[in-house]
Amino acid sequence: EEYGFGLDGVLRRRRDVLYGVINGIEYDRWSPEIDPYIHAHYHHRDLRGKALCKKDLLSKINLDVAKNTPVMAFIGRLATQKGVDLLVDNMDRLFRLGVVLVVLGTGDERYERLLMDKQSRYPDVLYVDFEFNESLAHKIYAGADMMLMPSRYEPCGLVQLISLRYGTIPVARSTGGLTDSIEDFDPLKKTGTGFLFDDYNGSAFLECVKRAIVVFTVKSSWHRIMREAMLRDFSWNASARQYLQIYQEAVKRRHEHKG
Image 1 (spheres, rainbow, N blue to C red):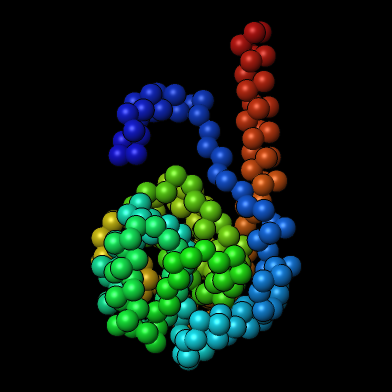
Image 2 (image 1 turned 135 degrees about the vertical axis):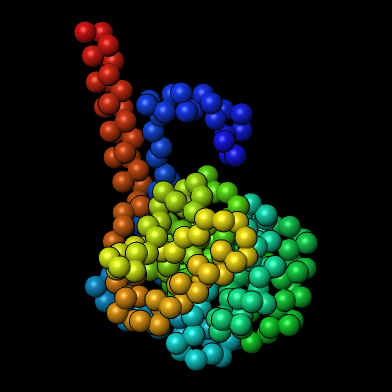
């Protein structure tokens, strides 16, 4: 109801004939196996290049930290919809967890000013860039360990799809397309492709980050999540197949109705 924009009742009544198809991404542009912008190529069977990309990213942004430090990233519009208020308001507590954060995005000038202030306070663990840079974006997707997506709402989203493709694990709020495309990590089954939280507040966000960090310290578990994430198919071919199924179902129903 919160995100129905007045159509919630209609959508619920017609839910038996409504289907959702999430976006796809261009695999010839977003692929760690062939990406021309990144320092080393890698794939789900051989993740060694990921560590080299992390080292290259930190070198490019002039951050000197221990190699086992979790590198988190945020890529996107600096807007309340993307949860930037949640990120900025809890940044002090976030850095007490011993992480590095890389922010690439443009948007609300208020958030830009707040982030610049935070960078002046945490120059050794925070890097911000307010101008879109294609090369840097690719390096971040390949070099970061986790992608923060604390969105207030997210109709679909592309950042998490690209992140999964690069084995950069999303830490995201469970809303909209993020819920549809990220499987929350199950510590008992050891399955999942990311870490999700429900409530839009700092405590829920930070607890989710802590969950991710705990698993990150166990490399075998983390590599398992990375491989599972990279194996998920979010290509436009997959989206096209879903569209085809919907059209085929529509034709089938039409024939049955005529009959």
